[in-house]
Image (cartoon, rainbow, N blue to C red):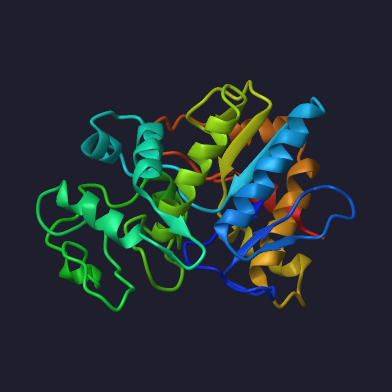
Length: 274
């Protein structure tokens, strides 16, 4: 399970609001990654090892895999969320100390009428076509929230790029990584729920806040919430019965994507509970 970040390198000392990765392997402590390059290299190696051993692997990432219906087609000309992954991978530039996510968001805004739907420029420099505040937009997507977010109280819209709880930047900086990982292992990685789950590796979208109370009960004294969240979910998934896991993955959301465990919060909370 992977807690992602849309920001820059967070330094050598483990801290909150950074990338944390936890696995279900006994004795393997959650891993702190100071930047996305480090995390991508670790994920690449772990997937390669899993495939070499003939095992199966489920990896959860805490950012949206899709956008509200119609957006992928508006940007790429195809109603395919994976086409948008590819489009972003071709344009996002990422280095430990800087990235161009705000400029790419402005680029997408320019393809649509008015000002928006992305907002939240957190840089000192102004960026044409990317407002700093949501109420400065003149254009909003006709359905601002995915169906999954309508079902998940507290979930943020994908358009917000800055501010506490925002996930827009994480998606812009995460989807290109998922695209590259899939390209590195062609025909071996399924992106749920867009692909059939008949491949050795599956990527799923997670939102740990879905079971935040259970996570807090399991790790009442953990000072870094991100670390607790991935550790709890990594331990919980193997504890699910095959029938429950299958039910959680039996989702029809071919364009927008879905949050793993949504609609099954009680079962997931029981698996998380100490």
